[in-house]
View (cartoon, one colour):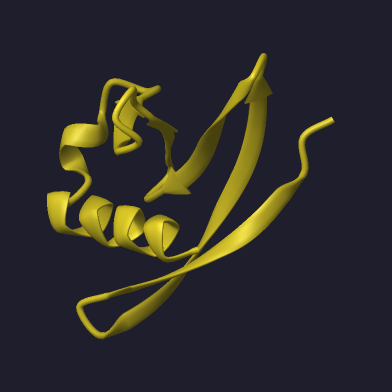
Length: 77
């Protein structure tokens, strides 16, 4: 069963607490993070960099800067 934890992200001087669920997939995993009512899926590519998959088709509404702040927070963990 997947458990949800909170990911603290600072963006434009404001602290956001985003729900994060770790979803195991074979030998890897995805991070499902709820951002502004949408679920974005973060996973590492073949080079170890995070890529973001939009599970709803509406992620164009999420600020690229906010997504970059989430990636920076994940990389700092």
